[in-house]
Length: 76
View 1: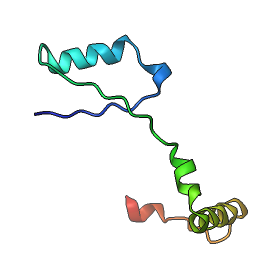
View 2 (view 1 turned 180 degrees about the horizontal axis):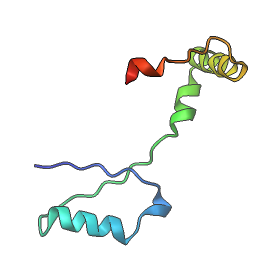
View 3 (view 1 turned 45 degrees about the horizontal axis):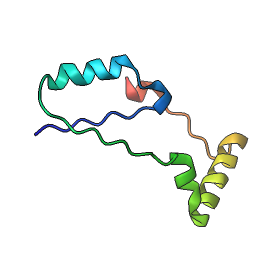
């Protein structure tokens, strides 16, 4: 049994996706389940502690505090 997950926005579903499924599975019987996905940013900001941590990190980045510039030679 093969499982393939396609993640897309509903308004982006088109013939290309249908053709891809047909190409991959041919005449096999398949089951298509549609699940609405929660926005990742909303999910991460739900927890008050996580929200505070992320917002503080964003402020530090925007103000340039604690940024590290990698040495390009190290990564050749």
